[in-house]
Length: 115
Length: 119
Image (cartoon, rainbow over the protein chains, first blue to last red):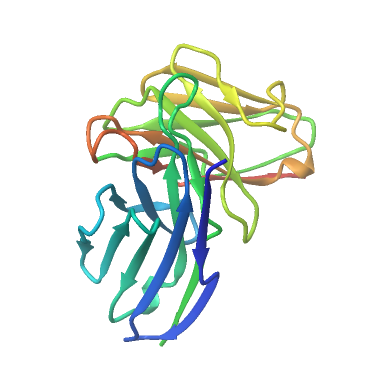
């Protein structure tokens, strides 16, 4: 059974701080790892990572994957109160046969950014 | 691109009634959509995989007669909660896989969710 573990489970910082969120995984047939941000509604897509060592960047957010050590990190620099959310890491199983690429989620990291 | 909508966003109903939730992919075709429910402060729980033109695949423990799924077209899946009870109150979220963009279709885009309250 695929397994995704995130740490820390919660994090409280002040505006301007830099945070690093961790996601480790144990999956068969790894294809990609996804990061989402969830505020009060449903998750919004942040990144999809497929290759080791290639950083994906979007503004103050960046993420990288290490397929050898089976983990990914999500960095947020110069945090703002609007970054407060639950950050979810997920891995799709391999689509094919009876599998349709369903996601296994980590528990999520609750990030709180104080002004 | 890759926008998924859900309707309604919020619904309150009486116990025993049925509620239908629609999930639409607005700018892409989705042969596969997924239905989740989420309780407060918990992660998403996959209920079923909805496949266009065929029967849905339900996760263990999810009653298929209670949560009816119909994926009638490449852009629409519906979830009907039949004979709803207070314990069915939850946040229901759909997602769709976009095969055409984002690296081969493994990214799922989520709808905004539907909050169901059964009195």
